[in-house]
Each structure stands twice: as structure tokens, then as C-alpha cells.
Image (cartoon, rainbow, N blue to C red; front, top):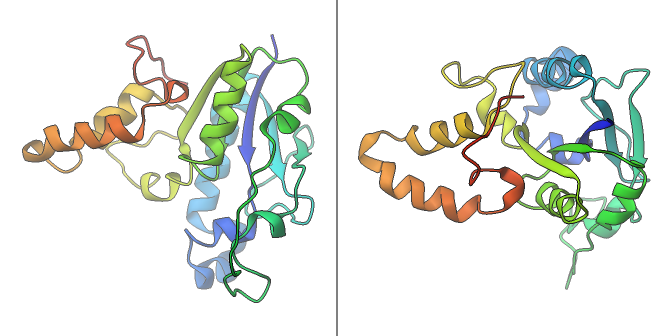
Length: 210
């Protein structure tokens, strides 16, 4: 049984939206959130028999992630410059129409797999799209929301975050209740609206920790 953890697009342009540039320049890969992110990938997936795969744009290099010897890198069918709304000088492109990487182009590079866990950038967009196509092709698929861009708001939540496991039911409970009991009904409506894709597995009462 081949199990894969696929992390989408760990590049500087995405990561630096969520971390302090000054702190990263000072600490590099020893910057706390990146240390914890790398430890999570190791504990949750490498140590549990998953092949770790990173998807990159051909014109970008991996950033902030410790690629191990047995990890694999696959590439999108488009350049980052085709997907980004800003040019290399940071100026917004006029009349820009974004292009998305072809999901099957990525999945075909994984070969025959039985289980796919997807993380990376971004939870509600590319991560969801790739996971949905994987599920539609009959692969047992789950999005680890802890290890998407949401990670940077979750990793230091001591009452919730666990380095070695992800549980959809635990995530849902935390997200609905974090604003307090007076907002639970409203929070649940918003949660159900935002996370209605089957790849998040919130409709399954048998969710298990990973």
C-alpha cells in the first residue's frame, strides 16, 4: 500500500506572507514555526510510512522546508509567473487572469497510490482542488488542514495543536468553539459553509487521528 503526503508549493512568495521576514532572516530554518512545521511533516508522515512529496513551480525553489534524501519533488505544468497576480517587481498585473496548475498533471507524477494526504498552500484553493481531483479518481484522500497555510495560526495553540497527529473532528471542534460559547451557532454555520468539501472529511463521524 503506497501512502503519500503531498505538500503544495513551499516557495518564498507564499511562506513569507505568514512569517516575519526579519525573524526568518535572523534565524533561517531555525525560526520556530518552520522548525515545528518540519517536525510535523516528519512525525505525522515520514515516521508513519508515507512518501513525502513536494510540488513546486519549475521557476521556483523550495523554501523553508527540510527536504530529506528519500523525499520527492514534482513540478507543475505552469510557471509561477503565470499563476501570480504580481510581477517580479511586486506590481499588480493589469487584467490578470490566473492560471492554475493542472491537478492531474501533478497526480500522475505520484504514480499508483492508495492514500493521499494533502497540505501546503492554500487550504481553500489549490490544496482543495488537488485533493478533490484525487478523491474523484478513487484515491483515499484527506486534507491535513493543520499543515496548510492555516498552520501559522494554529501551531502555537497549545490547547489544540499536536505535532504528531491531525484529527478532522478535533479541528472542527476547535474552530467552532474558539470564539466562546456565545458564538458557537454562528461559528458552526460559517464552518459548514467554508469546509463543505468531502476532502476535509467533516461529514464523516468516523474521523481518525493521523
